[in-house]
Image (cartoon, rainbow, N blue to C red; front, side, top):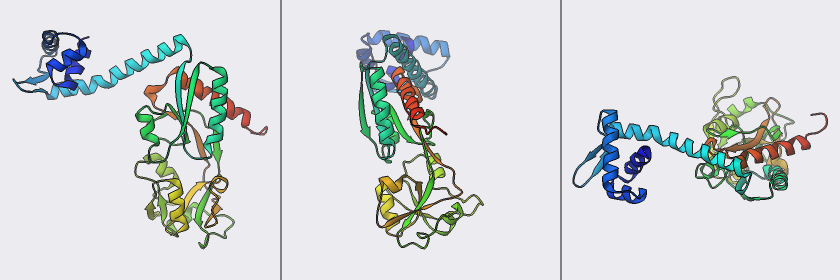
Length: 296
C-alpha cells in the first residue's frame, strides 16, 4: 500500500485526487508519505498551499519503482493465466503479405488447442508495428528479425535477398549482384519509426568492404518504397518473395549472391509474456516444423 500511495500521488500531484483514487482519506495519504520520507531521510514532494511537486529524490524513486511494479503486475497476470488455462483474447498481427499464411496456420492450431481463447487477427504497417506492441493493441506480431527491444521466438520463415530496381535500371538484366553495388546507387530508406537494427540489416550504411552506401528517399509503406524504386529514385534490398507478393511491371528483382537470408518469426513485448503468448509461439513453431521440407 505504501508504494501504491506514493506512485499514485506522484502521478496525480494532488493529495485529494490521490486519496479519491485509492479510496482512503487525505490524512492517510499524508501520513504514509511522511513515514516514507522519514525512512528515506529526505523529502519526496515539495508542498505548498497550491501545488505538489516531486523533488529530485522523489522523481528518482518513482522512475525506479514504475518498471518494478509493472513487472510484478505482469508476473501476477502470467500466474493467473497459467492457473485458469488459456482463455480470454489473444491479439495477433502480421507485417507483410508473406507472413500472413504462416500466421493463419498458427492461429488455426492455437485455436484447436485452446478453444476457449478468442484470437483477433489484424495487419500492421511499417509505421505502426512497434507502437501496436507497445500500446498493447497487439500481443504477438509475425515480423522480420531483428526487431529492437522485443522478445522474439524461433525463426518461422526464411528467404534469400534480392535487389529491387526499376525495370529500366542498368542492373535489371543482371543474373545476380553483390552487396557492393549498394555503394553505387542510392538506397531507398524505411520510415523513421522503423527499428534501428532492422534498418542496419536491410539498408546498411556501408557495404561489407566498408564503402559508404548513399541514402535515397524514405517511403512510409513498403508499396510506397517500391514506387520510389520504380521511379528510379533508388534501389532496395528485399526478400525474394516480393516477386510473388509484390509483382510489378515497373520493378525488377535481381538476386544478391552474397547476402544472408532474411529471417521472420514472432516478436512481442517482454512484459507481455502471458501464457496465451507462450502457447501461440509454441503453435507457430510447431506449424513451421511441419512446413519444413524433408531435407531441412
